[in-house]
Length: 345
Image (cartoon, rainbow, N blue to C red; front, side, top):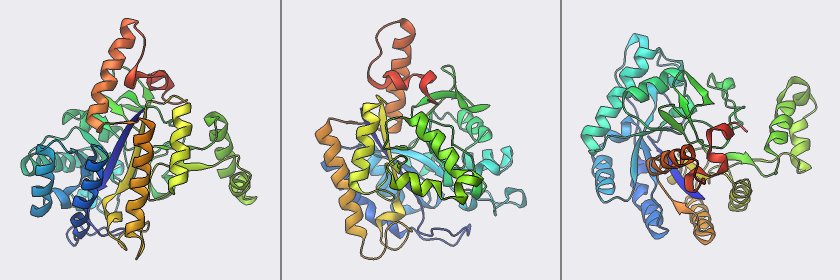
């Protein structure tokens, strides 16, 4: 089992969409986080956005970390504060996937070049801000030379916020074509590595069905989701210290390992490192948040999980697919459920 830790590294101003008025004080907490990762031999993927990639202090820090091989630097786009700005940019729409294709290219290309010039690396991994990923976004990433996207949250819909619906996506990584981001295709140029969002139950097919029933009109009327949760029939969880306690993260990891998926992808935001900046870490809860991260990483080390960055996982996955095509036994990142046909189980 591989463990990926992917972090959205961004400004402090949660829930605000001003293109120019922001701060990045949470980044002062990153060195302490990196010390934890070094202690547990974790290679994190820092997915940085424009306010971070254009901040001199952050640029110096992440350039040093990348040069020393302590992390991977990827890209994370908040369209509202990523240049260029214009009347056609629809700045009021925070979902990148909803912007015109040309605007998406301009913003992603500008951010990509900013990271390359300032931090000194050409990123190949990406996550859309607010999980707003779509076919036009994928086409731009392919054009810019990206290899990995990690914008999918399995079994979760963002339609209520104007975003994509990932309800029918599964946990397994899969290659895909840019014109069809939901369909596995071994010849696709991009690899999807979803955030780890799953169920504590063993039958994911049944859980998906029950979740859809609970979220339809009648299910909402009778509060079916709460009933199923209290009865232990439907318990959805995120591998994130922002949304789950340590016990839940461990139970989720153990369930996914039993189901023979090839990787875990822990996610959180850099703004949660500084108390009071995100809705997940209140005043006085900063140390507790870091303790949850350390406790899960201790469990991961004891369980023998191998730490990889998104880029490293993509490289190993590609090798495994080639092995599978040759007819040899699958192994490593190409375990049974890593195979594209299992992507939407």
